[in-house]
Amino acid sequence: MKKIQILGSGCPKCQELHKRVLAAVENAGGGYEVEKVEEIIEIARFGVMMTPALVIDGDVKTVGKVPSVEEIQEQLK
Image 1 (cartoon, rainbow, N blue to C red):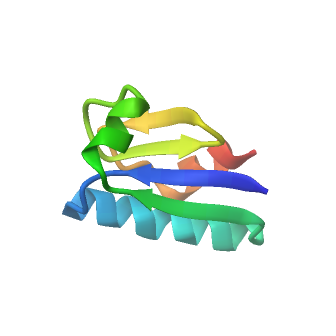
Image 2: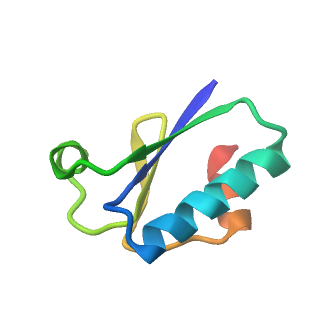
């Protein structure tokens, strides 16, 4: 099972990324653990200075932008 983390404080962009990740996971047929990380200290541990950020299995995939559902699905492959 892949682990997907959304790093962000809960701003509108962070919320939109969360929605898009959930849509991408649903389109992919599930099998993913989705977690929101809102604590600044936890976010900093990834070396991320801008949010939102998308992390898949510990690898930071995007920072400071909200990728499309299709882009997220490509990252999940």
